[in-house]
Amino acid sequence: MNSKSDYKLRLKAIFDAAVDGIIIIDQKGIIEEVNGASCRLFGYEEAEMIGQNVNILMLSEHSKRHDSYLKTYEETRQAKIIGTGREVEGKKKNGDVFPFWLAVIEVALEDRTIYTGFIHDLTEIKNAEKKLKTMNENLEKKVVERTYELENAVNQLLSLNRQLEEEINNRIKAQSKLRERESELEKSLAKERELGELKSRFVSMASHEFRTPLSTILSSVSLIGRYTDTDQQANRDKHINKVKSSVTHLTGILNDFLSMNKLEEGKINSNIESFDAVELAKEVVDELKTILKVNQQIICDYNFSTQHVSSDRKILKNILINLISNAIKYSDENGILRYSMQTTPENIEFSISDNGIGIPDEDQKHLFDRFFRASNVINIEGTGLGLNIVKKYVEILNGEISFASKLYEGTTFNVKIPNHQN
Image (cartoon, rainbow, N blue to C red; front, side):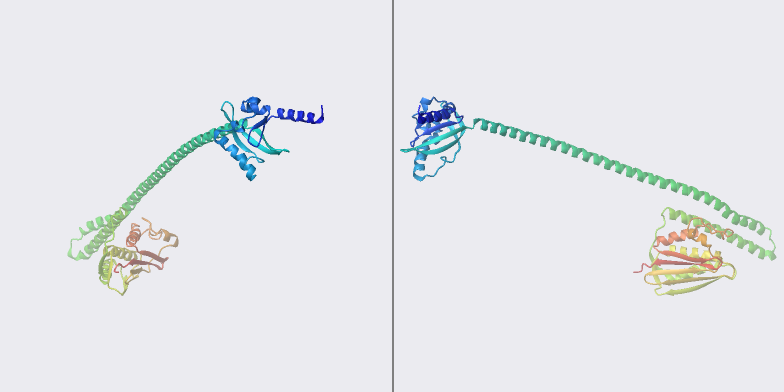
């Protein structure tokens, strides 16, 4: 066997043993040679393919254009598959369609040109891709389903959280209301205790304060009955004055308690009216002259830039009477009281000064407390309510009250009340 024949055999063996299909066609597309792989791929016998146009292996829409494609390529040399390769679909003998990769090379012989096509079956790859695509689609579907389930779970969790927050808020509100009720109850209990203490202090104070004037009244009335002669009129007058003084004292005590009770219950409100300040100032002094001690004097100093003012006349009068009465009470005979009053379009201001016993420094911080009495006035009649009432009256009128005191030298009270004239 010569070398040329041996070479052809070798080529034939390689040609037939190739895994991929190999088909050789001429310039008209007629199949000249096929290998075994091509026959298996397309389902033909070798004899059935040799001499046939290669378009029998193509889908009808491609087979009609195949001849013109070869002709165009030979004229223009512009390749679509030849020398490049592309993915196409082939048609088997039984009509089945399958995908494959087609690479075509042009082989120039001495007398003519042939084309060799290499066919690599893509069926398994496409099936794998399809399977992978299906798996991806299923995965995406499951992801969507799981996402939906997760969203539902999150929504349920958020709903539970909202319910929990609402329940917590309701509990907080309930606890807050409970604390408010407890606070109100504590205040009520404290008020009850305070009222109990006030009642006890009232009973104690009343039993002491009422006993002395009542005893005086009783003894004076009894003595008056014994003075029957005309020349004993001076004695009768002395005891009659004692009775009057004791009745005045009792009336003052009762008025203090009535005022305190009304203030505590909020029954006293301001009644703003226009009145003559000069007239009020003189009226207060005239009423209090009757309770002045021996040789006591009230020195008045008035400075009225506006004679008519607007405030609660009754409350203002009560404040003045209470403060001046205290000045009289806590000053000795021959004492001097200074009563100054001035008005402006904005305010009504007055001060009451005495040169009496004064207030100890340690007692001054409690001066406006109910029932409080300074340590140096134990032997002087009083309820300990007057200044507390005065302070509440001043607050009702939106005013201010202050004082300065020095032991054994006297006390000065200063009051400023808004003038509602403007």
